[in-house]
Image (tube, rainbow, N blue to C red; front, top):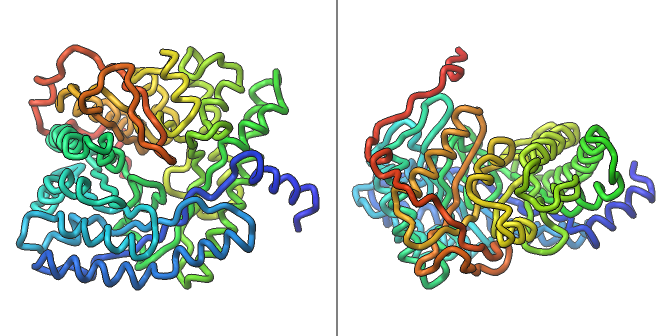
Length: 452
């Protein structure tokens, strides 16, 4: 039973330290929506989503009011559309994206994820159709998010898919240039993608999931930052223990919301994703946590070690608080969505190479990074390949969400607003990776993938 001190502490976390539930995400299987006609598939998808998720936002708002816990987003994830649309005779899946967008608006959710394909070992025709449709689909919708898994520890890296995604990202940036390349902010390229991720833009409802499920993503960088202020100058053992205890409290709150939403909607509870997801608001930054450990600026020497400690302690505290922890569960480092990361990038302390090193020890990858608009598709593909290699070799999820800033150069700012924040355009290496990417084929899986 909670005592008064615990209740007051939790209220302070919510009121002063930016504690919130970042998202309640309903996963919905669309495998029964297959048809030879894109028009009929679209109609089935719209009808099923609007029926399953019709009360999602209403229930989320009820829980917010009753428990006093902010629930920032209500979202939907669906079965990868490349699978659902595989039987379609038409090759353009854009109308399906339009149906997803229409359903999201009808239900009142802010994003819907699952315009996705899983191509870590090769392509089906449905995968090719989906990937080719991504630029137009993201350009003509507001709430649809897309992801493509190009690598896994078991399969290796599909370099043909990596090459193709570099081209898709460039085209998406061009088609959404009027909105600062917003389409690219809704597109993620994965290695080792997970099936129960509640966070956008990479959420999809995996084929191993049930008919419908509730997954919750919590967030609490501000709470962790505040807790660490109480142990200034203490050894890292104390720092780790402090983070663990704080992560436990955050995750317990997330589980409470997940179970309550599950019961009220009559949908099974899936997982709590205990990732520390920052925002552009001051006091809600992962970078500031790392600096509280003693770094002058995030990105300087020692940053990777500090982030490794944070990520590990968050996981250890979270798994003690819930039997069903899943998703990505770690510390996110999206540049545009983290006030401290933005500041570090503007100071020149944080750059692509350092961010790549940091992704070796955290969730989930090179995230919300703006690069010059004239960056070639091959260079973007090479960045994806490097990040995929980290995921494959280290048996972890990694990803790239990168925005070529059309007609902008290094030092310019890309403005998105809201949770997506703003990103300084960062430099890429000037030397070419063209011949490397042109090889195609598949980089084999590492030796340690052979565990059977």
